[in-house]
Length: 232
Image (cartoon, rainbow, N blue to C red; front, side):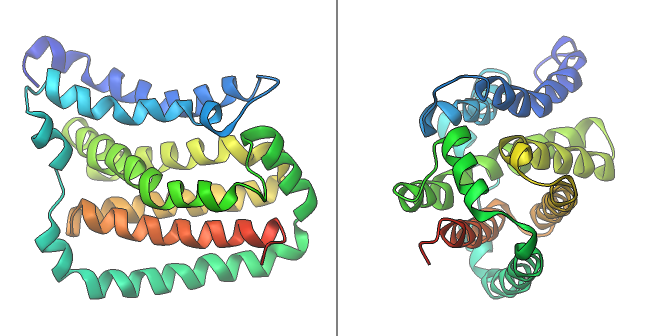
């Protein structure tokens, strides 16, 4: 931090950033008519690290964007990342097919259309955005900023758990209202675990690997969405 006074407010500020995305999502869902752009407005929060680094840490725009990104190191980790994707992919798909008989696809599809304006006509285009852009925004925010900053004011475990919970909540606030409670619980534990694993990935590798793995998991999630909408 640039001064002791700013350091004093650093931890409360990080807590606010953890809480803000799910709170904004809930408020947005109270609107009677929405589209995908409006339902995604909370993602403005994901740009806070950029301004924080520029105005608080006094770094350049280029330094702020590139922090944590090491493509050369990513290339050396590529084979290991592919193995991780294979294992996580089997877990994700396996869990879905194990529980899919308990899911009402038509109700989920209807609620996705009403809550976040995702439907059979736009899911492919939204999916491309989620895979290539949104995955980076989330990793840039949760791993590249929140986890790293919380590590400065708390233990590694506390930082990992907190960001894992924040990561899970901001996803579940979108879909919790139209899933059974036990499925929401399973997803919550899975997302917290995934978030904590990605924190570990950042520690051992770098942000490119986090983005690559996250994007691959989003491919699986969009594929499941295509199944729910009856496209495949």
